Amino acid sequence: MCIIFSNKKKFLDLRPKIYKMVEQVFISLPPMRRGYHLVTRHIVEQLPRLPEKGLLNIFLRHTSAALAINENADPTVRQDFETVMDALVPDGTVQYEHNLEGEDDMPAHIKSAMFGVSLSIPIANGKLALGTWQGIYLCEFRNGTNNRNLIATIVY
Image 1 (cartoon, helix red, strand yellow):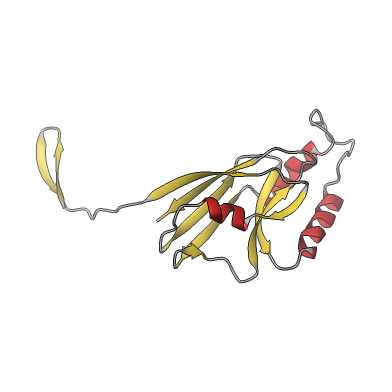
Image 2 (cartoon, helix red, strand yellow):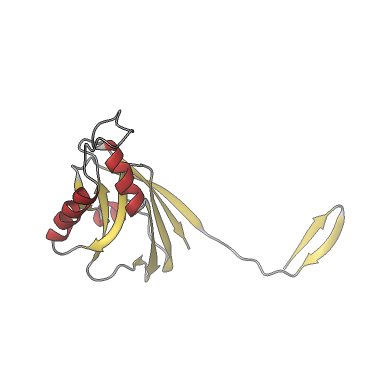
């Protein structure tokens, strides 16, 4: 409860106060070769202490890569992703008009749109509430890249 002054009138505000805590961290991932890379540890190491419960949103600031959550145990899962996605959206197809940045660029944009650039992960007991076999992937669709930049937003 608080007193609010509005247009020089004083009145009592009985609305409940809702306190929202939001924190943002900029995360940089090192350059990675084309493929599907587990980056859970890279991300967690750059996060501040997480709240007991909340939500983490991770946003990738690029249009030729993506984020995904999938199996973190068997590396053949990542190889199979690459095999299937390269068959669905091959490099160098003459139908692509956007080709100034190389034959892998337009396919990278398409794959990025298919996977997405944002993840929301619940936080429970002060940790990311990923399943036993789940990890965060950086899906790198370009042949040569620089660092990839993320924004992590923590909602308490």
